[in-house]
Length: 83
Image (cartoon, rainbow, N blue to C red):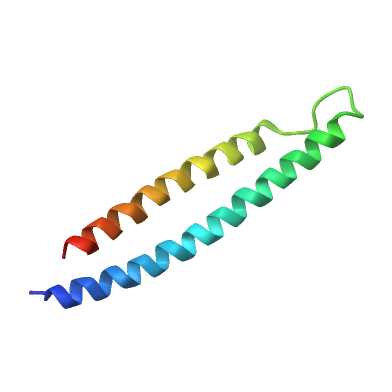
């Protein structure tokens, strides 16, 4: 049976991983948004949009995942605080 200290230590490691994931996902969202903006700007000189629908969906999906990740981080913090 795990002690409270062991659980807290594990939650600290989980928190570290979540913060790293948050940082990387935030950067990915920024890069996707930049790519979208560049293609959108380039589209002004073309009769059709150069922005593939998959890129728009990827941007939306990354933002959704970021929101979910923040929720998980908050839940882990609350749980850890109750221990």
